[in-house]
Structure formats: C-alpha cells, structure tokens
Length: 72
Image (cartoon, rainbow, N blue to C red; front, side, top):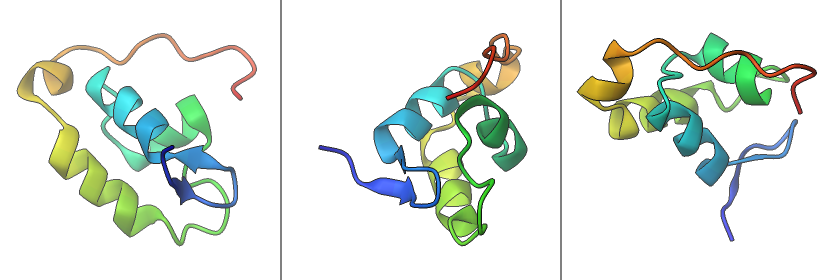
C-alpha cells in the first residue's frame, strides 16, 4: 500500500510516480492530472523530490499525456 503524499486530495506516491514516468514533470501538471498539490500545498516539497527522483530523460522529452476529462 502506497502512502498518501497529498493528504488533502488523497493522492498516493504510486499514483504520482506513475504520472511523472508518463511525462508529467511539474507540480502544476500533477495538479491537473491527479489533483496532487492543489490543496494546502504542504506536499509541494515532496512532489518536487519525487519529480527529481523519478523523472527520466525520456519522460521529460515527450509531451505529457492528454489531460483527463473530469480529473479524479
């Protein structure tokens, strides 16, 4: 079971890492795709660390996937 990184919106580390690996490599993008970081913003430092740890050159060079309709 993955821990919640964004407690406000109940977004888990696994979910965030998945989006990062698909090319969503900004806090704003994560907010758009999975709502992470759009509440109190206390998780922004953790989100930045996850982006640094899991962003790949390949993921960063390709466009982010289509924004989900009616996210979460």
